[in-house]
Image 1: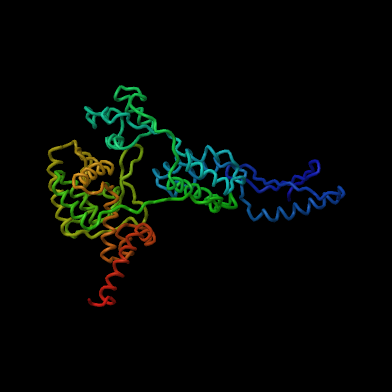
Image 2 (image 1 turned 90 degrees about the vertical axis):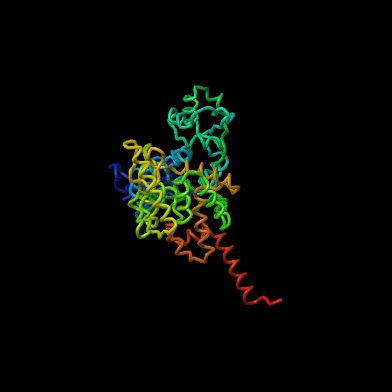
Length: 451
């Protein structure tokens, strides 16, 4: 039964709700103010009636603990719930985003005080100036002239691809400091600060989804009564349509690949176009995943970086595990690549890092997507084609299937999408163009009068 204590002209009512997982007693408190002009006895009677109704109402939420702070809830979620539903690297990334962008604002707030308008303000502020990390851009790209890129990257303790990315963009302060130290130059002599900027709508929406997952878990465990994210205004996400080559551009690209000297890269890009495989899935392939006799490719892993090391992990979703039938031309390319790789591995002897990997760097270690992107853009530039990204080859594969009137279900299965909705949403503009072409074909065949 709730306890009632008179305080001046109000009554403090406390209900005890058992104990939490740390053995601390749970309690909920409310305040009742009697109407003006009633006697002391009547006021106490009304307070007891109010307490009885209030306690009966809250007993439906036995485990509610909305006096917890958000920081306590975040710690509970990422240490108790998330390890069962998220991969280790994904958990690390998601928690990092929440601690960087949400914790400074909501960390000390009690759960009962977190409202949809409060979240709207948070998301709006992240859009304006949420990039809390200052980035740095080279003062002059010629400052890297004369350096062996691989040697410089090794000395700085960073990836070689980071240097190539720096030539086109910026890097975080921690990485910039490593590079400046390796070159023996002060940070301000090598870099200009880009200043703080807002996060993109897509980035803020991702934070909203991660935050919503924490609140949803709390509601399921009856820690919270509702998820305030559900009524918050979603950030506007202006996602541009997926880039891809059309059929004519694809043929030009294949010719350009054949002219460049890196045979492995030619095989890789052909495989992207022929299968729509994801970059991480391709980089994780072992020869046991390809049956060169039957022409079947099995997607079982994706390459991720965990604690500084590249490892093979389970694919993005359960639907990502799949089997793809390869065209004969791709099988022939893979056979030739395997033969050439065996010769390279024999020459390298003990230096070869991962003997079973299908695609490797010069020392037989896993190849990574960022390095492949540098090569891809170079080939595109030399061929006079748009400088696309590796993932654009996956989009090209999908668009070619759509324009060949392959059903969305078959395309979804081939791409490893969990549902056809993902396929239809991602390639809606391509489906629209394909439908327009189909309408025009019917119009020409049946309804246009011969002139």
